[in-house]
Image (cartoon, rainbow over all chains, first blue to last red; front, side, top):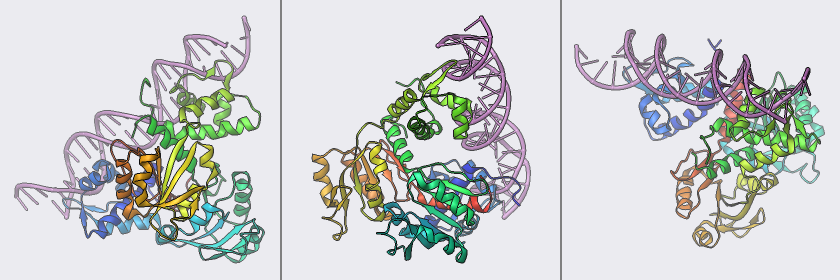
Length: 209
Length: 209
DNA sequence: TAGATTGTTAATCGATTAACAATC
DNA sequence: TAGATTGTTAATCGATTAACAATC
């Protein structure tokens, strides 16, 4: 489909473009040049044009980019309007925070089920979903399809949980357990908040940007 | 001090090395070669050696690396044992989850104060700290020094909050508000969980990685 | 000593930036 | 038309990988 694989560096910039364009839209700015956008975002105009041209030309020579059109194109590329049915596994503090974050729901995430092992939590509800025991996940996923799993379980069990969900057909994992996982055939986004903290500390001490 | 500025790419890999070395240690493995480590981590041996040599030679030719020594060196570089006094601003679901995450405390973070504007939350306690009204932050920071601020406030107010804290001497910001901030003279780690989600969705749909 | 593996230099690869022809 | 700005090719830069001499 794509003429060439788009590099991960470009892909990771797309949500950022999306945010800046959203802000432009909300400020009723309907035209922007790569130069102007580059100044707002702290990138080079060249990079912006290269990035957009990975997906086809969205601009108009001599004019610039129509903000709404560009915004819609990037939304489309990122699949923001696609509904992504997600199960949450691990309803601790972090799991609860993720399940209740309206920002994710704005980007197409829909929580369809939540699971934990703690009897104090099972039976309660989170983000509008009843929390079930993890052993209910097999029958649940047989009746309800899920695109993504949000993993907010302790590191010691995350691999087993991921394998179990993969067996049940889940192919996308948003993993907050601070362990790197990869299962061939599935896509993992391994989030490492502790790494982020350590990096901040290092950079602060070394006065870098 | 450093002979040359170490690139951000290297720095962002350090916490990852740290995690893998920690695991080796807990498995009583006390010697590792760059080749062995590269296979476990999915990197090249060459990159590992280059990375470590940004900070000086920690290995021994013909032998490899002593795991404990290497672990300690990287801990030192990252400043993991340094106590980082942090204030939390914004005690919503995410703020609460961050404040209660024992993983961060293992890496030297100490919550010294928490602040919010919501009268239902002010007076409660989070992560062992009483939640104060944001307007109490000036007197608080005059009496208590803080190295870092964890920002978990809505995007609309985050810039103002950051400026206010910067004025009070805070120079490190762990910003979860999904807005890119930079104040010259301070170090920002802008975390974008929604971006991470969008990237996952894109990658999953495009069957990469 | 011989074998192994580092530290480090050189080569390669990919990503970013610059330049400019195309064109609105 | 002239001016502006894109799309795209070429040049540069930096990061990764390969190679190998040093040495434990």
